[in-house]
Length: 403
Ligand code: PLP
Image (cartoon, rainbow, N blue to C red):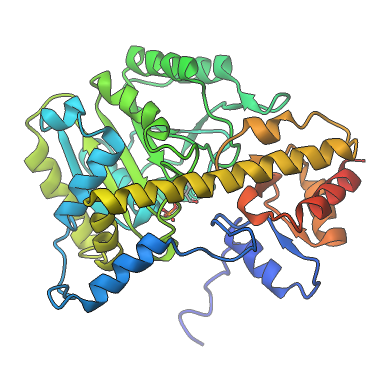
């Protein structure tokens, strides 16, 4: 028999497994609220027109070749990405304390960042993630050579908001030098973000305990519709002069999910280490996949680097985020009109692609089996999966599930 015969089957991914189940469901009423991608008001994938136009220009541009990028990617893309998240007037950029490399979307930025920590800080570095977090964080951290992630408490389930006292209490016990993974905005899966005052409390404990923030920004501009608002947390921490890491993704905000466009920035508290840091990031990337893909980075760099295209993109962010907020308002209204037991304020107070409904895993199963409404077992729904045509059906199913 083959040496591969003894390979055990991996458990299905919590999120990707759901999509496969949805596809296989023949019921015409089925609704997919599991998917982490934007859908239009008629439930279709969306290619941003500005992205499409730039792609067409690239296709016609004889100087746009398919040559390799260097390990750290397209320089114009990296520079523009750092300015986008940190702010063009960032003191860290002015001081030259930032090293930015292109990465395979947000996941790749996290993976390279954690590998860098494991190899050049310490492979025993403790990493704290919020108790509720994107499930892949728990895969990426040990895969990068670090111990399994530790948790800090995040959500108050009774209100659906951040439990700041518990969060600060947990971080206060973390050893100096620990990495704290923070969702820059639009916390996934809860949709609950700290208020600005609460971010300052988190900054305070991070400074006091000498922790190293690693910001995961998968939703800049997509959450509030404003690139500035959604970068407030990162910029506030950078202004405090800390050592930190920052992951960026253009999957959601440019709709380039499958093109794997992202960046990792290492922000140092003092200048001087940039050349060494860059050399090691490049060596890390070289051994993993040699160099990143070019197409998406070319598209993003073109949009970020041109005032008119940039303004058009900002308009798209407003439209996409507004559609999601509209669905929040409509779902809450339908739940309340149905007199669904419970308080549904959280549907509209939460932000980003997801809402944490508070449904139990039994209720989630019930909704899937009886109504063919799909969501992750933790009760997270993707607001982008709702449309005017399905919002009432989903609200009715939710009422039946909680009663
Ligand atoms: N981080 C968070 C919190 C996310 O929600 C996601 C996407 O769902 C990602 C990172 C990374 O996504 P990608 O690798 O597609 O950029």
